[in-house]
Length: 340
Image (cartoon, rainbow, N blue to C red; front, side, top):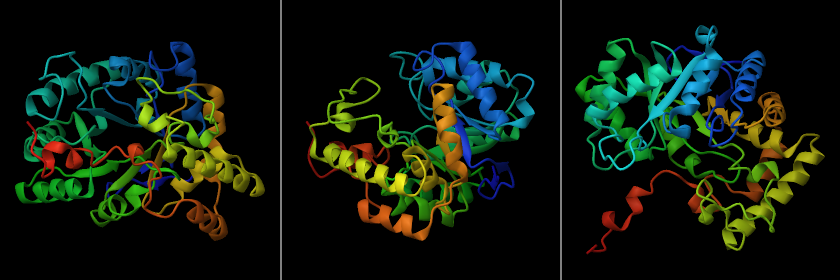
């Protein structure tokens, strides 16, 4: 794999980033097999690994740390914080200094390392001043526990606010953004990608297969809705999701005519965007990993890209429920409607 520079950090990373969400009770419950998948990814040239404290309540971080034992220095290791980690305790979550300083120690222990290369805020907070979050993260960088900091699922306006706050208060700035991006979910092309690029941020985008839609896994007869797959995104009776099925069918034909698999086309689409540094792949099994690895080296011609644009226009997300940024701005409490 031909590595890329992560934003303006000077750090070299592979165009595929191994996401470890599926290692642990949420996905692959076989710990030894999960470790083998991680080792295979490293041997294939992936040097970028992304996890989060919330994945399987910390088990993903622990398994990742176990797999990286003896190979830690080969890897640019990223993790995230923000999501609830203490049941109903409202202070064991979020972007407050109190929680960040505590939770980074938990992640370091689970990962079996004394530093994190990229520590990311998993979601923006509507009730925490970004200066509070950046101040705590800056202290972690200065203490040597974190090398760089990043954001995830931030809207363009939130990216700008964080960059300006860092500049004005002389704090560490977010050097990366982690948004959802795929052929079916192109909303970030309109504002997030150009905004991040103007600020010199690296982009490690997640869900290039759009939750399995671009693997050909789902059909009109599928019933994949669950706690992990909300019905709004996977209800096959909805008009938006029916449109997704139609597009996937046409993309499959396009991929076949071009001599590649649908999975390879989907991953290549993401990694070929000039603003994207790396696509996060999230395999559960070795078979899934092997099917996704070739996508990093597949070139896409202008003709193929034009045909994709005809199916899904640039900047368009077919089902808005697939977006995972900007939700708070559209919540009733943020609109003109009075909420009793």
